[in-house]
Length: 115
Image 1 (cartoon, rainbow, N blue to C red):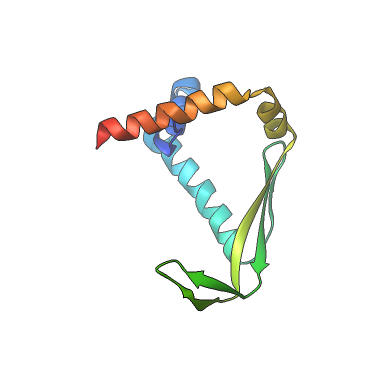
Image 2: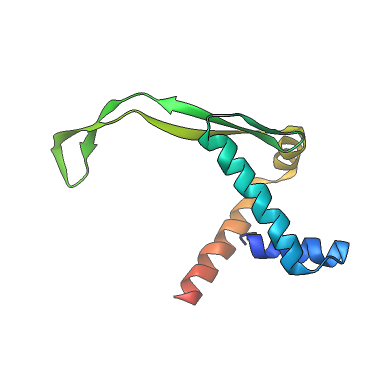
């Protein structure tokens, strides 16, 4: 199952009794500030959650999947790297491979049903 922004807003609203539109505004502004900081090349550190950092990937030569004999130059680009924080790492240690696989199967099954 996928946790969406709508799910976050709903849960926060239920727990805090703040109206969903106000919660959505705060969540969206938070995300916008994170995007803005990363867009300026700044590191975003959220204690216990993790760190978002902008990294530069070197230019490299790749292959065209439709025509593997043709080399394609992949230019230098910026990417966001995420390093999980202490609490997230602990949550991942508690997650068993069987429960992770079950969650992934549910997602695929739901995706098939919706189409």
